Image (spheres, rainbow, N blue to C red):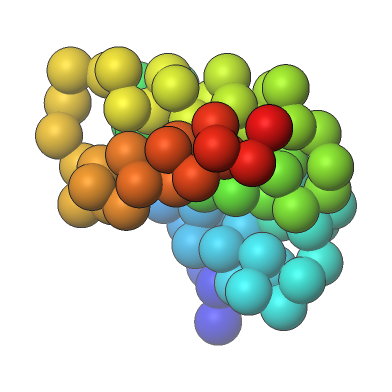
Length: 97
C-alpha cells in the first residue's frame, strides 16, 4: 500500500518515510535509506525522519553519518515520539564505540 501511495504522491515525505521504514523492517537497508533521504529532501525539519535514517545508516555500517543524523534528531527543538528511544540509542552507540 505504501508503494501505491508513493506512486500517487512521490514527494510526500510521510509516505516516503513509511515506505522507508517498511524496507528497514525487512532489512532492505539500501532501499530504506533512499526513501528516508527522499523524505528528508521534502521535510528536513522532521526529527523522526532523521531518526529513521540514522537507524538505516547504522545497519549499513555508515556509523559516522548515522551518529550525525541521530544527534540532529535529538538536538532538534521539535518533540517527536521516538526522542526517548533515540536518546537511549545514542548512549548505547557511544558505549559500543
